[in-house]
Amino acid sequence: MPSFTKTRSTSDDPAPGPRRIPSVERLVGGASPADLAAYGRIAFTGAIRAVLAGLRAEAGPVPEEAAIRAEAGRQLAAERRPSLRPVFNLTGTVLHTNLGRALLPRSAAEAVAAVMVQASNLEFDLATGARGERDDHVEALICRLTGAEAAVVVNNNAAAVLLVLNALAMRKEVVVSRGELVEIGGSFRVPDVMVRAGCRLREVGTTNRTHLRDYAEAIRPRTGLVMKVHPSNYGIAGFTAAADPEALYALCRERGVPLADDLGSGNLVDLAAYGLPPEPTVRAALERADVVTFSGDKLLGAVQCGIIAGRADLIARVRKNPLKRALRVDKMTYAALEAVLRLYLHPERLAEELPTLRLLTRERAAIAAQAARLAPAVAERLAGWATVAVMDCISQIGSGALPVETLPSAALVLTPEAAGGGSARRGAGGRCKRLAERLRDLPVPVIGRIQDDAILLDLRTLEDEAGLLDSLASLVSHPTAL
Image 1 (cartoon, one colour):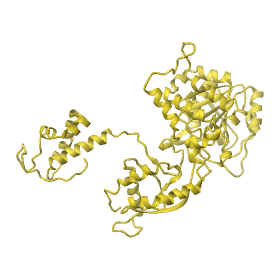
Image 2 (cartoon, helix red, strand yellow):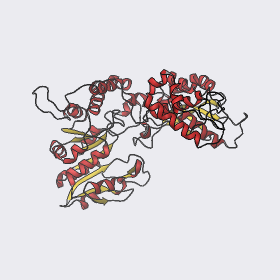
Image 3 (tube, helix red, strand yellow):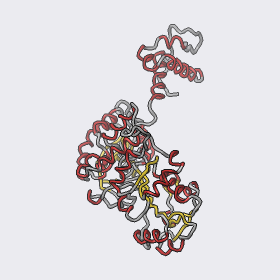
Image 4 (cartoon, rainbow, N blue to C red):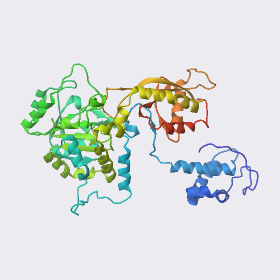
């Protein structure tokens, strides 16, 4: 149990003996109305019992009654703190999978809130009064923005790939280049997905070179699908070769085999126009593939979902597959996705209104100015904990988008102070780890990255400066040498 000051109680203790522990009734009866109102009498009583059980298992003096009640309150507050909480993502990875990926624009959050608290027309056609199709809320927008004939939405891109494979190639072969048999986070591997989808993998080419003739030789009557997979989290350079996408598409049409492209990132705009490294768009991919799958919460900048777009006849087969119902999304997802897709209809304001694009396009000079402006205030709040400096650094897009490209940025460098002051390097790694733990324990946790025995807070993704300073201020009341 958490430690707290223990002093022997000297009066009005109901139980005699060397360790006179107050009764549950006495402690609950003396609780403040505020505590009982906040937690409820039953919960507060249970917490008191838990604290007393811990005291009975220990040796030493008994804390004062007020301290026991306070410990019970702390335990209840910790239990009631939400597990899923906002954090400051200052890691330098804009679309950080572990930290929630894309941030929603306010319009999307408002759209979600609106359908959460009352009934909605999720599967109801307001024009006819008949049952509707939930994909209708976003399908027309997806088709307009990508050039697809039809589209469906499922709960993430892995589900989209699984559904396409099962609907179009179950009990058939799927031809994939060996260099595209990727593994992404969580040991999620394309060959494993194919097995679960009921398909048989047919590898072609080698890790670094796959030619059109390799595909041509592999396509045969038992082939159900040819699949391209975006190398989302790695790059191959040097002696490489890949089949020309248009030639491969022509080959598949000639042989009557659908071509699917797992694009992954879900990019809907020309990133080069915003000064970013180019990344294939969904529209361009659909010009040389029959079906494209992509994520909603990567470069698209919306909510977690997987989108399948392409030929109407193939999408119809996907839609009728029983797995579609198992993988469908809820009303909140459709509300958020629709709101974000509508932002793309106004491209002149997209970089301002879409958080993902806004953060990716921040100029290094602006981030450096922000770092210089914040450094004194952060140093004041970290006095006794760490010294603060400003340095240039690099950010990355993250979540498998443009894995080898980086973005210039600026960071605050927190170098933990050694016990007793000074800059001794002995135990620097341990001090850095302990400071990172303290930052994660803040009211709004601050997540940076450890580099060269210091913690870097990359400011590319920081928009709430006041909130960061408020959270760091809670360190002041507990300055402890690391």
